[in-house]
Length: 80
Picture 1 (tube, rainbow, N blue to C red):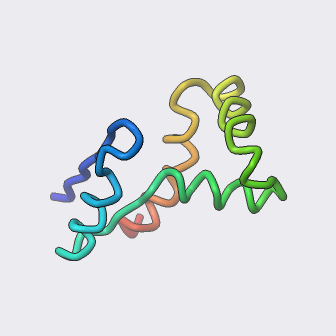
Picture 2: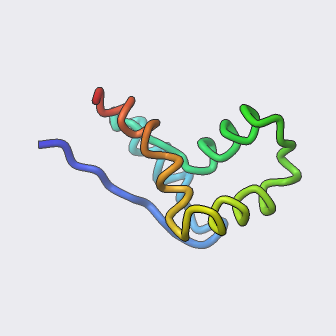
């Protein structure tokens, strides 16, 4: 059975440190921030527009818009 863990927290709380440690142990890691930046690049958006981009997605698709955006990336990691 595949297990998925989510790491959340405030800025500078150590999420990246935990993710790096998990990667070192062989776990696959998906950073939603990386997903947002990749999707912005695909749409020709500058990283300085991140807040506007994310807020626009949430207005159109709901509060879980970033999770929705991340789903295909997660499916790829899982081999689905």
